[in-house]
Amino acid sequence: MNYDSELAFEHYSPTKIIYGENCIKEIGLAVDSLGCAKAFIVTDQGVRKAGLAERVEKALGNRYTGICDNCPQDSGFHIVNEAAGIAKKKGADILVSVGGGSVIDTAKAMAIVMKEGGQIQDYFGVQMLSRPQTPHIAVPTTAGTGSEVTWGAVIKDWDRNAKELFGDHFIIPDRAILDPTMTAGLPPQLTAGTGMDAFTHAVESIHSLERQPIADALALHAIRLLNRSIPRCVEKGDDLAARGQQQIAATMAGIAFSNAQVGLVHAMAHCVGSLFKVPHGIANAILLPHVMLFNLEECPERYAMVAEAMGIDVKDLPDLEAGKKAIDSIRDLTRKIGLPQKLGEVGVPEEGLPEAADLTMEDGDILYNPRMVEEPEEVLEVYRKAW
Amino acid sequence: MAYTYGTEEWEQAYQEMVKDRLAKAEKPYVMGSPEWVATYEKKVQDDENYKEAAKTWEGTVVLKIFASPEAGLDDDLYIMMDLWHGDCRSIRLVPKEAGENGDFVLGGEFERWKAIMEKELDVTKAMMQGKIKLKGPLPQIVRYVKASIRLTDLAAEIETRFPNEMNKEEQAEFKKWFDDLRATFGF
Image 1 (cartoon, one colour):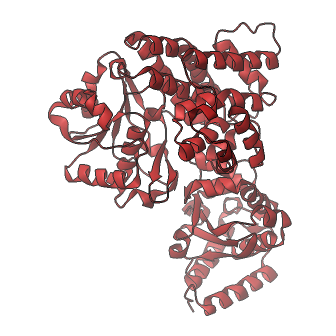
Image 2 (spheres, rainbow over the protein chains, first blue to last red; image 1 turned 45 degrees about the horizontal axis):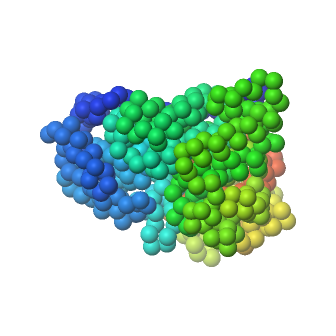
Image 3 (spheres, rainbow over the protein chains, first blue to last red; image 1 turned 90 degrees about the horizontal axis):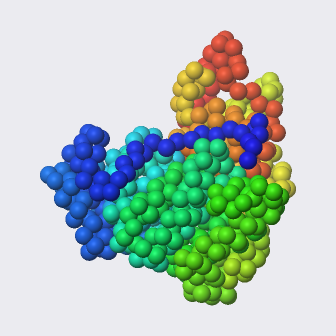
């Protein structure tokens, strides 16, 4: 728990968060407060069919100027470029993303193209931008990714079948509108998966090499809220108080990991997602206990903090034992909310594990894992245990 | 006489200039000066650990030092490292047009580079924190993190003087000489 004299960090969290049941009605005022007048909605077909985009459109009133509703699960360069072109042509001066992580990431990337010109491919890299981008209000309709408050956008190059990271503090959304009524219709499996994505963000920001007290505080409280709210939301999806808590916790975990980063769980989950289409939250949920076991001896005091936040009595336990209890408790949680326990259950072929291990070595998140990973064989061993 | 970058004449004149500087310049060398760059080149070329860690690396890496007029640097400075399969084929000061077209361009204020060379700042983490800007795909850098660390360690081994450590007279003299050099070689 103690931080030593070498502690040094920067914490940056510029997003104004607006929370409350039906607070989506305030989106027009949020647009005005940013000095904008013409809002362009970015969303997907599912959100549109659920009537959520229409609610936003209505709340925007005459500020609404157009919509792109064809964001797929893995948004692509061509979608970003095309949608940015349409938004520009319509004279939009602000983007409103309504959806999950992929939709919000698409809008972050569009914000770059609309401000800087050219194509999104021209902005490959990390922290390359030098000025604020097109204003962006994010309205998450899932409660997990935290993308509404983070500096990264993952966009797929469909031609090369590769996911690329665009990371920059200038693409963090200006506003995040957290309205639990926008997530009320989320089915149980998606609620559980996205919830465990948020839970993993929290745990990984706590064990990250870049951990820091402010992020720790956010992550620990996120764990407290998620531990109670995910099972409730899965069981009773129309409990708006629980929905709200999961949503707030996901945003808190998002701020935590946007500052402290994530580690090996995410590096591995990105790879099984990219190679075998395993939904990100489910991959995280399966891999989290295995990676924690892999890391346990490097940071037992960190996992003891997780155990305590999960409500386990660790008062007289050594950190190592407390850490093991946290791992067991996470397994219990994922069973309780009905998530798969093994990679083999979600379509990952055993013979595909070496390729996944090799690819994991190229993921930036691996740099922040508390236990240094030097060879793909170490990752393969974790994959095998999780398979 | 001004030389055109990319020609044999430029390369020949650059090498002669470096030879002359290595013979005449006083140590410690100023960061980013031709003699500093040449010393770095030699270190990378001779380093077995780097060769092993980068044995499959392909691509040029450019270190871009942002302009800092108060430190006597009126324009951005580009140091291009031509690296291929563990070999360091060359490290040169290059013109902006060439530098910006490197496969990977790592840019930052010279204070950031100083912190990296003094091992107070980890280069890969600095990228994630926005202290160093990366143009180019991050995964390849991550894959070769050991090589990146080795390159940083080698730079840190050079006894270096930083422009802001000079007094005003020294800085003015260095600036005049360096501006002439930039006009001659276009970097």
